[in-house]
Amino acid sequence: MKDRRQKKLEHLLMREIEEIIRKHVSDPDIGFFTMTYADVSGDMKHAKIGISVLGSSEEQRRTFDSLVRATGYIQHKLAGQIVIKYTPKIEFVYDERKEFRIEELLTELKKEKEEHDGETEN
Image 1 (cartoon, rainbow, N blue to C red):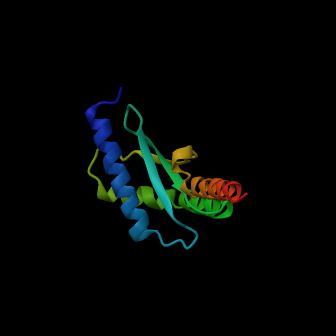
Image 2 (cartoon, rainbow, N blue to C red):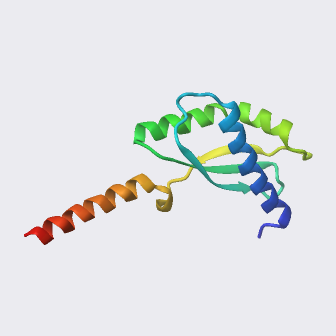
């Protein structure tokens, strides 16, 4: 079970990392993404950051790859922004949970609606 310090650090990391990416990382390949979670290890030296990306599979791959390439820079900026004995080593993890695949769900709903509308016309 996570203690209060871990939870607090997770929230801080999500806020700070997102701000760093939005303000300081100027890679044109980074598309629309959402940070879905932060998971800090028990010793608070490692953190996994869940990333969900909106767009085609090619856009998703490019965005995620660009974030992974920028990890060192993000880590460096993060170390300068948070006051903590050890800045956790961050690792981006592609989050494929169904509830974050909005575009896919909307397409699925549109198909179902079209099928339903087609049935009611007959």
